[in-house]
Image 1 (tube, rainbow, N blue to C red):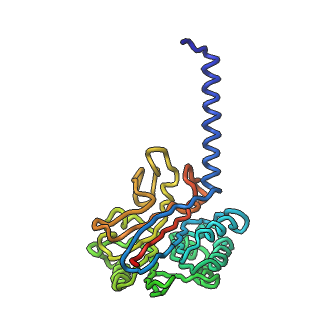
Image 2 (image 1 turned 120 degrees about the vertical axis):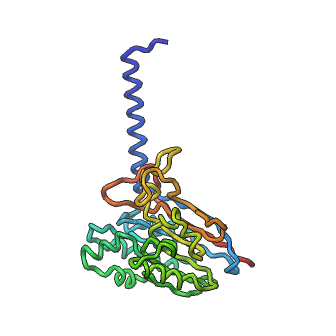
Image 3 (image 1 turned 90 degrees about the vertical axis):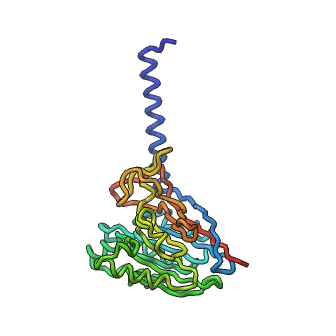
Length: 290
């Protein structure tokens, strides 16, 4: 069948319009929509179920006025505890109102625990503001190479937070000695161990999940690869390179005893937009022995 040049140009134009429209829709959804990802796990270390909501990498994003849509969506999940695993703020934007307001509202739903991301660390270096104090005043528990032994929903937990790579002990150096010392202390308990650690790379690639006796690690940082392509996945992650795979979801240690929960997060920096990457609220139900 012969197709005239005019018809071919029209078809190509229509295809181009469709592609632009779909791309624009994906960009908008990847900035303003919200998704909820549910993961179910089990352990013999608690006697009944525990629901955890993880939020990460907000980067000063707003979902509704005062983040009303995000707060409402978290409330609908009815969590026992909320974990925020870093990058609530952007390092080069002085505003803290969005992050503080979110925490003030989340603590009305459930206890909130926060750990640092690289943007918290860089923000404090840039502006000299004590974000930990601001977050505490808003009602959150801040854990920076610290842990707390707590009872939540009637269950005995150890919740910790660390900003660092958390390499296995065989890679220990003077620069990482405090990480090794913290993780050694943190794992020394019969309680269910839950660790907030913004950086996932060593847990995914360098066998940290096999090395450290931590039941659940919650991480973010890589934004699911930022731009997610069909069949190929996320295109790039810091420390992991191009098309590395393993950029979101649930990962198990070799013995299946320990779990990494890696969220795509909620936002991004002002430089690179998310694409085909709906902001994510992570919900993890840990079932215990009854």
